Every structure is written in C-alpha cells, then in structure tokens.
Length: 225
Image 1 (cartoon, rainbow, N blue to C red):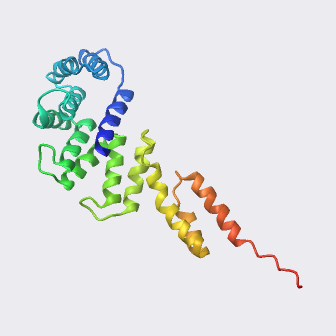
Image 2 (image 1 turned 120 degrees about the vertical axis):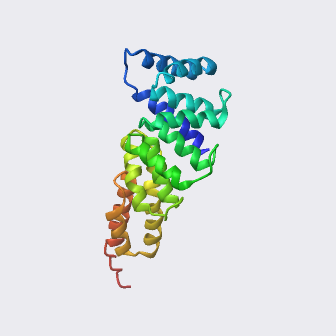
Image 3 (image 1 turned 180 degrees about the vertical axis):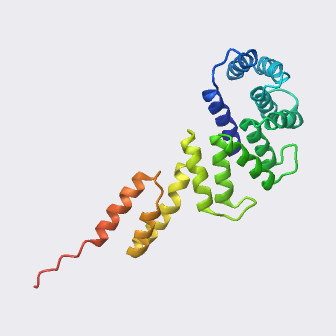
C-alpha cells in the first residue's frame, strides 16, 4: 500500500513541478499526463512513447510508470526497460521507479541494498518521495542497521520538498519516550527529550514544555491541622 501511494505521489509531485516548455517532447509529455489523469492510458502511452523514443527522460519515466501500474500491457519488463533509460540520464523519477522495483522484487531480484542505492540517487536529484523512502529504510532497518538519526535528515528533505507524509514519523519516537518519562517524573529525561524533539513537532514541543513546567512547580505546603 505504501508503494502504491508513493507511486501516485511521485507522479503528482512530478506534474506539479514540471516546467512549461515549448519543446515538442515536453508538450507530448504534458498531453500524455493529461490523458493519463483522464484514464486514457493507451493514448497516454502513445504520447509518452513518442517523446521517450526521442530520449526524453521524463517521458521514459512516465511510460515506465504506466507499465508498472498495469494500466497498459507490457508488465515489469517494459517498466524496467524505460526506468533504466530514464535513470541513466539522472532522472529522479526513473531512479525512484527502479528503487520500487528492487524493494518489492518486481521483475528483478528483491534487493534492499539496490533499492536504497536508487532511492538515494533519486533523493539527491530532488525527489521528495524518494527522500521519504530513504528515511524509511533507515528507520525500519531495511538492509541497514535501524538508525532514527540517519532517517531524520531524509525526512526533513522530503518535507522541504513538499512531501509532508514523514511528519508523524519525526514526532512519534519523542512522544512515546516523553510519555514514559513524564509518568516516572524523570526530569532529566524529559529535559533531554525536549532538547532533541524535532523542529517539525511544534505541538508536541509545546506540550512537553508545559508538562515539564508543571512537574517542576514546587508543591505548596499543606496547612497544619
């Protein structure tokens, strides 16, 4: 489910950030995107292929996406072929597509190492969805040791690129830890977590500081009876 959502999101982000151009191939990609969004997949494939055959990497990636989704016949083999052509030109959507295929073993041997390599390349080339994927690999320990601190900057990059999906992932570890420290009234641990809580968790930070202030207040002496 995460990968299907990611595939949809990368197509939306790509369409939103694609610069307008008078070049013929760009116009074909734009018309292909419109046809795809309207559910006219065969028409979209024809338009994408016309530009892809001329070497346009965006068209090659979009065509790969059509094959990967199963909306046109051709399957994983065709998706892999077009993604590879796009990735060879440093296109982040093509690189992200290869990452998905290796992560899930779609038409290639499943390989987290290969998937992470392609996701990283795509993220370095500006893909916000790929940046989230790199973060997820480090967070969940897919082919690497689990490491939240290594995941965090990739989630930051994803959010900065317009993909807000990782925001809860940045907050939940601190929310869980702080709740436990608050229950124990462990002031030192509460202070440590406040200092480390992510900047993308403003509501959590406000709660933590208020809770820390509350447990820091001296208890008023009870009047003698």
